[in-house]
Length: 494
Image (cartoon, rainbow, N blue to C red; front, side, top):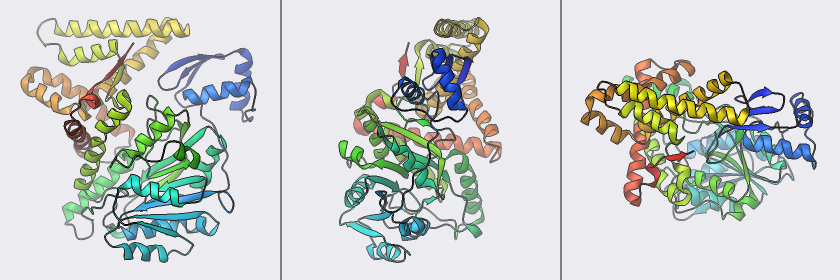
């Protein structure tokens, strides 16, 4: 069962993303009890249909045995790279046991400025590696397409140079592809600790980045401390780390995308959607996953498999990365419309949180905001009670939890994508700014506590605000370039 799922009665389950209520029969409840006790799920009967419904909704998660990936398993690892031979060599050393076991390793050189250094890194691997080279740089999507088309495997594992996979990562992911409806699955990508002695390989970054950030070696004491703070921050807030909970991946789910820094894809699925979109310099992995889902494939996230990825070498490099990620929102919105919305809420909740910060603080303003919030909570409570049949108190607790989650989402949108108009609103109406600042900053304090206080509180808030501002500025820059505001608009539902 998923960690957030509530089983309010033997036959009533509440959970998933978006949250839903699922009622099952007594026979289905008995089958669920057997599965939770460790019994395998049968195939080809009504109980298999129930299991599929539970896992597709995110109410339950499948426990999938690993699958061997050695000789005759049809697995190829594709590593796109643009220069950065040191990072490539580190990844190839980590993959050497798989290569010796018969896994095909393909390095796709995306027009490196020093192709001899890349070739030397490949030649230095203690196992067979195939090198294919693009004469002209085409970007991460083009490099990955070149790599998987040159590979022979029916299963393609994409892995960025400088990534260090944990033992068993590929076997755990390949097991999910035993389900022929699953097109792709990804591990949890976590930030690696700094190398011994504080040194850092220059140029660590995503495939095709092509720009080396300032390394730790040779930086002054302040630069070294800032880099150490950044590493601690990224170990709990890396944009590649999608968290500890497994589940289905889809635009409206808890896990909405997968990074191609480490991604396993069925070859037939890649062929069905013509691979990565080479016109997208960033966001091509999100686009691929969403096109797979739209094509009827299933996509999964499996955090039980781990891959390490270096943190950015400097704060400047980290903010450049976040800005680049933000620039992908406009082209993604052009292709996938409201899937990129910065906020998705029922309209009563959106009205309530807007009133909380927008109603003038004159006499009666707090009463108006409170009345709107109470109305939204009452509407949500009635809706939950109608759908679940729960007692009023239980339905109210669920509604309140959903309302608070909506407030966190509203605060994130204001802090991340909508920060330019939010700052302007504070300047134009300073008497109302206190509530907006409190709404935006309060969730960061709770995050800091949950993350185990990896930094001092002030540094944490500064890093978080800078992180969000860099992403949001990228969104606005992308929208200006695309002459479209679609990526800035919320998605409001009933």
